[in-house]
Image (cartoon, rainbow, N blue to C red):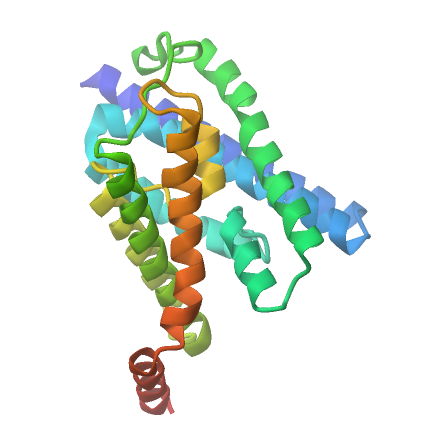
Length: 263
């Protein structure tokens, strides 16, 4: 029991340290980098590195203490990220949505997605250093072992899960953004975490191409094309679909009703 408690404490410490490093890196960029696009690129890279760094450790938490503990950590982290990332999303399809809506150029979106991928891929070297210390048994041999896929269903089903869940989450997020109810951050985090847990034993519940690529690209059990179909095509299709779904009369009527109740 003492060993398990220590191991969980170390995993928690690694997540906290990663978050603090990202926090101060973000502060540094905001203070010293003045050019808006360059600043956005750095902030997206930092946010994605923070997201992926924390989620690498959450894999350890899920493997050793179960999905329930994993969900609690993810819920709290999602609230933290919402409070600290500002305009950064650490997620490629948010930029694709803005291109479709005419809010962002294709060039800028491409650069931001590139920055996210760089941040997500580079952070693994940092995680390797932490795991290689092997302070606790749960990190033993983790730094250099072959990872395995989280996809537990056929590719087309996995893509469908990522697509539908992403669409639901984006529709809810849009609604919360428009309504801005009290505790909207907590509601958003709860729904996002619930969807991840629901999809955990199917596709892994990533709903973020950059996160999935950082954590699972090249892992045993999934080819390059399968990875792209499930975690890029699936999630991005759900994101794009959410734009049209949110405009449906039934959704808009519901949002208007909620606005009237809030007056």
